[in-house]
Length: 366
Image 1 (spheres, one colour):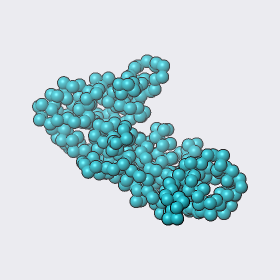
Image 2 (image 1 turned 180 degrees about the horizontal axis):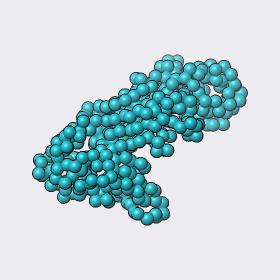
Image 3 (image 1 turned 90 degrees about the vertical axis):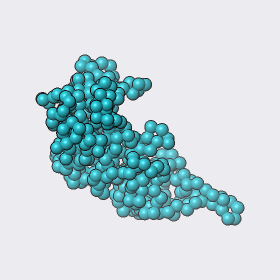
Image 4 (image 1 turned 45 degrees about the vertical axis):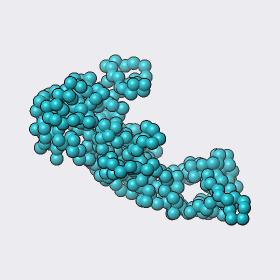
């Protein structure tokens, strides 16, 4: 007989889904059979797999340790008496943290946490760091978050923290992650439904005195990793929408913009602003190379990344019935209520502040 205690990171999911992740080598039919025969019980009672787990729930498995470890995917080692002996697994409270990629010591390897609570975490990603791996040997913000939480998410048996939104490598600023399954569920639902207000700051070429509302049809070419836009619908197109409000006029014909990203497409802000005739300063893909080079030459300041920063996320109060409509667990719904009305922000990075100072807009960098 084996017992485990469900920890907060795994709470909120259905029992059958938890079991499929916990027993990586077992098939669904075997697990349902174990439930029917009461070889797996929840808090000492028969379960059918549809139950929602809560922190502190006790799961009991009435089968041999060898079977338990086989379906867990625990490796075996040669025992002292000759036959292979199973490696003993610690209980839930002492489960080993998931393995993470080694993170080299560099300016990009320190996680900058701007806000966290029991269920969610918000990090300030520096420009130049990937949000998620592109190749196996990449270091990403996701790796840093996983390493940071390795000693904090005690009791996690199936849940692994991960980012809920992504930023381009060259874009800095806020990235949200769930510390628990309930937190991840909440962030994913709110971002999918566009209920979180996402605001970016950027420096663009050209004078803007009035707000811009851009709504176009969008597609991404995976081969070239570029976005294409059209004012008319086309097969497979998605909508791309944003609002840009001038925050301050700057020297040399630039403008500081505050952008409300309504949809969240890859490269969207950079592509739409460039198409509108206001490319982001420092953008090497959609920007104006001549403007970038002239700025760097005039001020002896190399532009290594686009001056685009995800600065704020605003959390609305849930409307009546919204949590149920989105299928949120009670824990996720309670976290939404706790975050209601909150604004999480990330300060402008040094490179952005330097360019603001050069262009006479340092007063707006606070």
